[in-house]
Amino acid sequence: MTAGWIFSPAVTAAKNGMKTLLIEKSNILGGLGTAGLVTIYLPLCDGMGHQVSFGIAEELLRLSIKYGAEAKYPENWLDGIGTKTENDKLFQVRYNAQVFAILAEQLLTELGVDILYGSYVVDTSVIDGKIKSLFVENKSGRTEYCVNSVIDSTGDADIAKFAGAPTETYKLGNLLAAWYYFTDESGYKLKMLGGSKIPKKLPECEKKREMYAKRYAALEAEELSEMTRSSRDQILYDWLERRKTNPNAVISTIATIPQVRMTRRIVGDYTLTYDEMHTRFDDSIGMVSDWRKRGPIFEVPFRTLHNSCIKNLIMAGRCTSVDDELWDVMRVIPCCAVTGQAAGIAASMTDDFSSIDIEELQRKLESNGVVLHEESIN
Image (cartoon, rainbow, N blue to C red; front, side, top):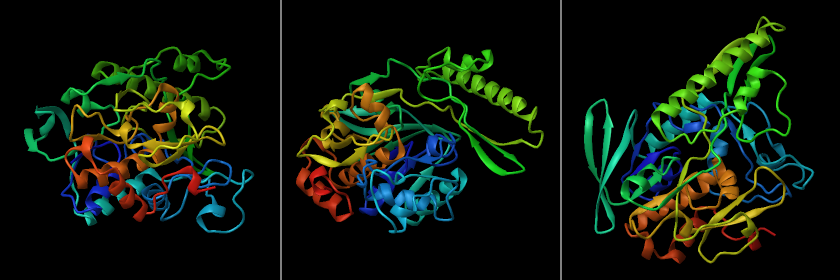
């Protein structure tokens, strides 16, 4: 069972023969990558000519542009032409959110995954260190689902918190973001308004400076509602300013969920730090790169995906156990896919992740195209 901010673990669990229920709070799959309009599939490479993330991370990238990419199409990587060096384009693309969501839904349906939209996990029942059931609320009311293993890919470590696993919150908070699409005479365009980092120089316009005036923990309903309203105010203001010089500009799509980046994560059996780039881990389940710069590679230890106090709970996505600097790296789609693939396979193997056969898990990952160690790509 997975509570879905991402669908990588659901795909993998189903492919490995597990009866899978994906519980999705929205009515569209993909979270920030679709409903949130953050439509950049960030690099699968280290920027130095080496592909780093493999398996379902690449499979989903190719799925996202099955009917064409919007921008940043890395022909030298996807089509096998040209060279792969530090001078080449990064292995990333920008895709259409709506198309990607539909294709992901079709893929899950073909694999036999049950999808429950408009649903929230609101509590758990834990007995002897294992989650026995999840309590889910939706249009039907409250329903209890008995489970064997649980993948928490909520993005906020909600299930971990409900189950009593140790968690940490992101103390710096989130800045307001208001990405939206507009259309004018030159086509369909993404406006990346606001972001996750304070710029070195703040905009001169007072209205735009408001975007950097407050930080959001983004874990309470009232604050998320305020964040959503402020985001839409910024979109309207930006569009009206644009119309002064471009009267043909029309807002096409706005996000339907708050565009938050880092909120809460589990404290795992191991916490990976940014300083551990290029470090080999015997329990690595794959690799990720730093999408913000060329060079760093991180092997991801399986121990960062769970805490042994809740034996049948495993994390995927942006709420695995890392320090704050690496958290900003791990929150993006390729990293979510890497951790999701490992979580899905692990969930198909056992309901006690503290005693999993790591070597068998690694063999299964490698048989699905995952490269585990940096030494294997040099």
